[in-house]
Length: 265
Image (spheres, rainbow, N blue to C red):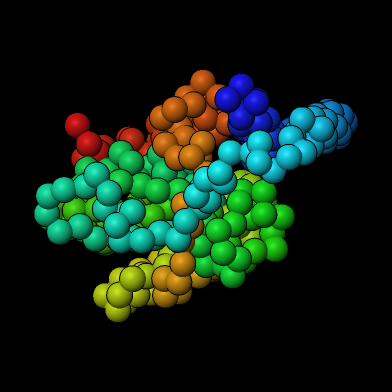
């Protein structure tokens, strides 16, 4: 049992370092290139050491290893989506607008949204891990699956939040987060969602709301794999973490002013 806890600790430490390398460290490059290189080399060395310790500590007899658990990332099913949800008929929206930590925090605060799940979708690799998605070879985008009550909030209102909480004109980039996994995307679940998404995109482009054309992809929903547990409810659980304090919190403060009338009370 102690051994298994040790391996779990190693796995979590590796995941946290990968998050830092892929989400937080790029911002340091803009401040000081020498600091960026030094920090990155140190963290990569630490990550290598963790992996070596895990390999050395692994038991040689496969009988000593506990049964392998169900993979963390499972294809999103209707049963999973609606787990622990009761009440009126619910609907689903699937959006990608950069880092899903930010997206999740925005939509969690909208009245009528019952559940938000961070995950990966739109790609071709089954049950991808965070590391695989960050390697940019899976075709997946960081997404949020939003389960909502249409009697309290409409798809049109969710689209309004989507357009106003990220820059839909930057291809594969949101701020310091760069890569195809940060693409602006709407995955529609029916013809009505498709029509509304395309209508608003065209109207916003025509209005000149942004100086550059909108590059948001609008595609039929294909697949969705929930991200690892530590990605779920991320901001609410890690408000003192650097990325949350200096990146997400300022965005949330602006968001709550703009959408004050639509927030949960």
